[in-house]
Length: 400
Image (cartoon, rainbow, N blue to C red):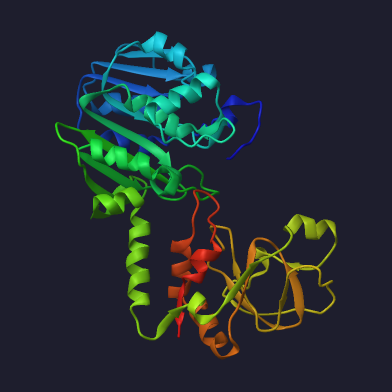
């Protein structure tokens, strides 16, 4: 959700309740067993309840803006629940003062929001490298920084975060600061349909422990199944973790390097390929009542497509010999087709790839193979609708 204006604070702040089993998994990952705890954006209290059920917490402070959600949360001792807006620094300071907490947890709101001047100043004071565009900034980053600023040392923090926190190049300095100040950092990829069975959203469980020394030992891993069991882990170097914390990326680098080392492989760029994105959206073509090729038109198993020759040529056209791949869409990012007849306009959700005729069959067969599909799935970026960039596709290894 980017730069979207809505009257609903709940919608604007991306409030999605934490599944109970994930709340239990987060609580079970923590080592802190007592002391004072803090959750900013405590919602209906699912994390709060899970932590209380598994730990001997002396005092748990929750802060929630939405009165309807706060009414669903436990509020009896040791819980102290405040209804307040985390994005109002002075209000939050008046509630919490200089209190420090042994552990901070949260499933902060995702996406971006246009912040007040006071909030922007607070964000910059916590993280001078914060990226603010016309007053808009990441909410999850803001909530995490505000929580971490109130954490005792030694202390522990655990957050459920969207993909940009662990992947976005513009947040590399945040990851660097976290890794250099913590003693341990763990980052676990969550199943794609954790929050919505109908849609794939990439999110992570991020845990940081702060001891006497910084320079964290960093572990990246993956959780799977209804109980979010650890299925893979890998220790990352400092430099690798600053670049990206997600295990899938480092697995992809291994896969990509193995292919590029092969003598019988080159890249699309070295092959002299050209890549072009479609010129109109699906809805625009439909409004003009023009035939077009969209991601929903790819053959399920890949293969040939044939067109007529009736479309006007002022649009980007796919003609015989052109390879088509999906540019965007988590469920169709690995689809491909080759045009064997005719021509047709294609949408902006599709790439047209043109390679020398001598390499066309080998390139298409490779891109249609399981390894070729896996490469594109792993190279795709994004938290929700995955997308491929031209630069990443140009670097794709293909048979020489």
